[in-house]
Length: 514
Ligand SMILES: *[C@@H]1O[C@H](CO)[C@@H](O)[C@H](O)[C@H]1NC(C)=O
Ligand SMILES: *[C@@H]1O[C@H](CO)[C@@H](O)[C@H](O)[C@H]1NC(C)=O
Image 1 (cartoon, rainbow, N blue to C red):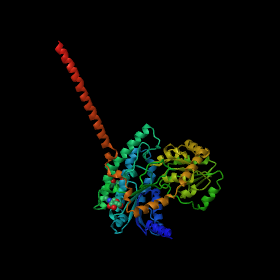
Image 2: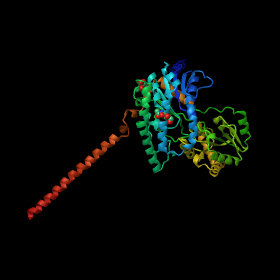
Image 3: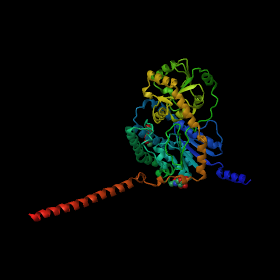
Image 4: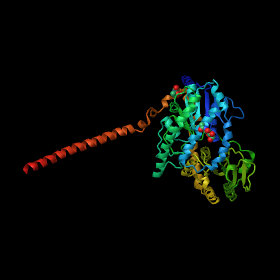
């Protein structure tokens, strides 16, 4: 009885949470990033919390406890941009990094001007907790200040310079490559050199461009807010979209939580035509999708023909996410569909290969279901995700710009026929599924934890109290070097003095004799 009472009290103590008011800020036009945030916010709503989500993807059918602040206006402009992506593939990583910072700063500036955003800013709603997408959109942290609510960030990418420094997490460019670079954690000298340069470069952009520019936006829309850096370094918890099954193991401070695979649900029934198509694929099937952000129909026609010719030669069936009614020159073994439930398709046992652009959700879902991949990376972190996939032995990649019919046929056949890829994919899948709780349960636990412990300041790393040169021990190094050099100089001086005195005395003896 006593035990029951104690455990009841304990459970009550752990769950005094009745409807926490949570604001989710996922304003990016990138649907894959939104899916992650949305999955979490929906789950929180289903547990009785009152959730409000600022995003470009408002719900078509209302969800209980889930309110939208509709920013779908953003999408009108970004359709053009999606098409343009196939044209700007040659950016070097440095230009790419700067462009991304500029682009996100500009987007944030524009978002704050939108009518629905302004209306929301003027409303007098209150929130207990704010969850913000971590993607160079720091002015939104003004909400944490305004509601005096703990700030949680959610990074749709793995560990990076963005997520690390904010929490005082160690990130060594010696074995944690920047996501603009296609390296694994085993780098040679030149790779470590560019990894280090890139790291410093990104930090410089952050502190000399992004934060100062974004501080102006913050001050304009949240009058009286502290300088943006104060909010930037005051994050309670960060969730990152990674896991050791897809990423190399890295150090994480206790308020950084891996939630890779959070979007994956138990497989649902497929649409009837897709189910039949895959069930009838006696020799297996290949699934081809360039993700939600890129559209296959924007692909230059000569590249499209290379894919069609390659697929025509396969004995396997091919399911292609193609965003139009018809596909000219489509071979008989290919089925097109405008929209496909990606994880449910990957869960089908006849899927033998996934041809993907290498977005992190796609590579994670392939790993979860143990499907080998052929990666066709275009930009951003795709190349790095696929290099990781290759390193883990679950597939091969071929950059979009290098695709020819011959090369494509070659990699597709290799990954389909050599069983080592499927075996490695199975092994990775087992690693991903072997967890004490699902990534989504883990995410929900930590969100509620931060609320229970009022921002959980006990998790905050003391590294954040140091200036950067103190953190890097540059002051200590400088001190030790100074002492060392001073000692050497002093010894040399003394030594000179003693030996010269001797010489002098020898000389003077000579003189005396003469
Ligand atoms: C944002 O980008 C648009 C389009 O390129 C441009 O017209 C506008 O001036 C930019 N705004 C800022 C604040 O940089
Ligand atoms: C930092 O976060 C804590 C906990 O959420 C909060 O109490 C404090 O006011 C925040 N500081 C600033 C400068 O916003």
